[in-house]
Image 1: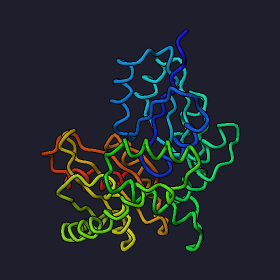
Image 2 (image 1 turned 90 degrees about the vertical axis):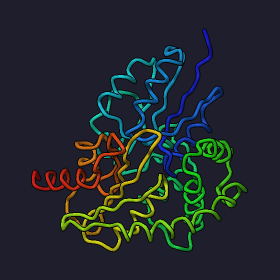
Image 3 (image 1 turned 45 degrees about the horizontal axis):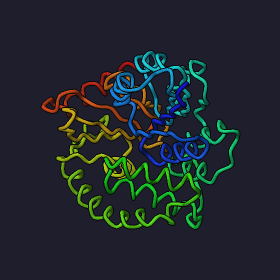
Image 4 (image 1 turned 45 degrees about the vertical axis):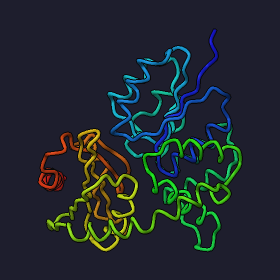
Amino acid sequence: MSKIKHVIIAHGGGDGVCAASIAASKLEDPIDIYFTQSYTIEGLILKLLRTEQKENVRIYILDIHINDRVVELLKKFNRVIYIDHHSHSIKNQGIFPGNIGQYKSSSQLSSEYFSNLKSPLATLGTISDKMLSVAGSDPMLEESILLQKSMICKIDDDGFRTLLVERMSSGLMPSQIPEVLERNRCTDNTINRLMKQADQNIIETGKCGITTLNENVKGFGRQIANNLVAERDHPVFILYPDTKRDKIVIIARNNSSLKNNIDLSRFMSIYFSGGGHPNASGGAIEGINNDGIQMVKDCFHEFIRSK
């Protein structure tokens, strides 16, 4: 019988990378690592169904909300382990072995799944996902900032994420990885430039703010959205083009301090094949030439009226 291949599929944010590092530290080679999101994972699973021997592959889904179509595709593999903390993933409890719970980070849940492994990566991932507040003087906060800024610099560089998993699963923290420090230097100028563009383009509808960025800002968009929503008392949507996939990507943020009971994860799941957290979610519009602003505006107002 062929040796089992472990395939780790994780979200590309700090929590997902830490969860993948925890998993990789406990698994034996061969290990393949992929990074994706809730609205792109279906294509990846279809590719794996074509290219892998399903009976010899063990799939680990980490920190990604999966919809019913993806669940059915995953059932074709011999074994799938699902570890996630998004609220809408609770309905998948029991379909696959793993660990699902919405009040912990995915890195914490991964740590618990792998023999209750005690790892600083669980703390690092939790801070990166903002599920754990720590003092500004806490060195782990600085590690989290370094980790996230290093990935933002070249957000599509999954080879760098794989390097992070390899280094962190061996016990290194981000500050001990030279490539992390180098990439941190490229991030701040880009964020400042994009913030000016987002402020200039924002449209306030009364129910939400919608802005567009004229380039693929994957990675940077999250920080821009966080900055914008901090100044507002309603949700903010950022739209930007992904020409390679012919999609308009949507990043949604709500100010968690307002208690307005708007579940952006549910909104994105219903209208834009996305998901995430109630206050931080994402999705996409098929067709880059669509009027994304009008579509988001109309769908969001309909969503608010239906509550």
